[in-house]
Length: 194
Image (cartoon, rainbow, N blue to C red; front, side, top):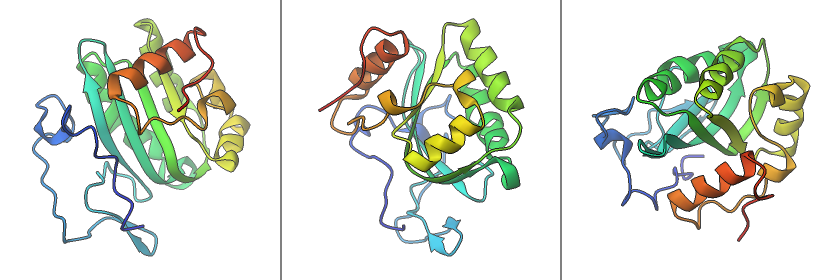
């Protein structure tokens, strides 16, 4: 796990710790000290902690003109035991929403499990972004994670599922990823490939 770095090819376009409006502004990272841990495994030090003991993130790109954020997640999304959605919403999403970000892509390639609880924070988040024609999309969820999310009926609040899986986002520029995801959400294209 310690070798899984957050996506870094967009750092020429955006760096969260240098963005004064970012919840991670001013954060400093070590390449040598591993202080984030997921159970018995250390995580690469570039991942950001936001209050959860099992889920970490990296804000990869934010565009304040087009009002979107691209965020990568790693770990276990556990609302049942750790109320991870509350931590994500209050620590990461709320400050971004106040900065007029209301379109969120969550890259879930490295989310290993999902355990649901109540849906209050999802409902609150969806209500906020929908007021501004925004959206929430979970990209590349593993099959069992997707099934758990479906079991919790999260499709009422966010976009995820087969059309949002196998998306090759790492090879694209961030603006292209956003444009295609926005078109997918609005039904103009089926999926991002290649």
